[in-house]
Length: 169
Image (cartoon, rainbow, N blue to C red; front, side, top):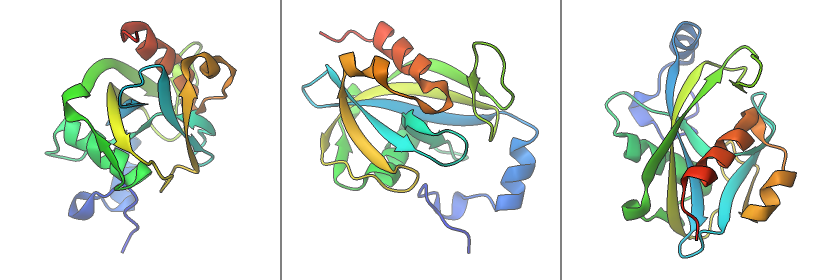
């Protein structure tokens, strides 16, 4: 049986089927920029060193067939940060679309694994995050610290875009 790092259960495609599909069509994903409840001046990111995306990243991943987008966000948060984290669903808001290309193009987001389209959200959460799965580390950052970070997959552009369109008072 194949490992199930994203909590997909029986909806996890066999590896060879997923490889065939992602070589031919864009993959739908969700990402989320988290803030601790009551503190919009801090955001949470995971550190990854796998799959060609070394650096700080948003929490997220692919959407499963017949899965609500917000349920996919919650599933990825739980799989990446543990059961001790709860998203306040009333604050979960769609913010932007990010497109990642499998080939590097000037000024575009790049993910060498696949061409992906990520519906990107913001949300507040409670609890104690614990880095799991693809996350080697999780940290809360003050917004002013973000410019000095090295981001995976070019996600610094996405984080900047999210902060521009999100009122953070």
